Image (cartoon, rainbow, N blue to C red):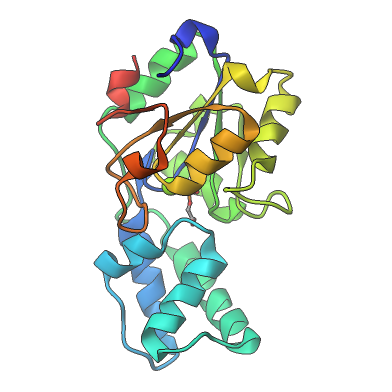
Amino acid sequence: MLPCLDAICLVAFDLDGTLIDSVPDIAVAVDAMLEDAGLPTAGVARVRDWVGNGSRKLVERALAFATGSVPGDQMLNDAHEAFLRHYGRAPCARTRVYPGVREALTALRERELVLVVITNKPHAFVAPILEALGLAGYFDLTLGGDSLPQKKPDPAPLLHVAERFGIAPRHCLMVGDSRHDIEAARRAGFHALAVPYGYNHGEPISDSQPDAVVESLGELV
Ligand SMILES: O=C(O)COP(=O)(O)O
Ligand SMILES: [Mg+2]
């Protein structure tokens, strides 16, 4: 069970698959990287199941699919650089905000909650995407997968924001689409709310036993 919103002072949102449907642009960049390497492309349906552990892991999974073996360091480094270059050219051409997100963010801001983004995406992409979609103004802080030495499912980024704003974890809520968000929330002592429409390696998010699942963030308010 989720506590009543009155008991919550800070809400941390996952980005990819929770606030925004970003996989169409991510898949274009993955496929461009694979083409550069002379490998078969993967397509959006496969890439969807590879998102969640940051860009390097995404590229590693794509190379393993395309070559049939785990890539060596040099190949992975080169491919990761190529992916970042391609993604950086158009990180927000096909990316869309999910239904209910703007309404939820507006209502939570009106309640004067601290709102943050904690994503495993490289931080350099976060501000340009939020700005392009008109979401930047809602957030007090954003953390990317490379902002700290640890990323989700490690609880460190969640504990970092709780401490930064001086709010006890039991008054914080993590909202996410993947098992990494739910695990990070558990380990940090945050409440955990999940959405079922995002990217969770093809598994139902209910398997991770979040406190609650909502079909749309519009239900939050
Ligand atoms: O970039 C990823 O791997 C996932 O990003 P997310 O943490 O916003 O879902
Ligand atoms: Mg996500």
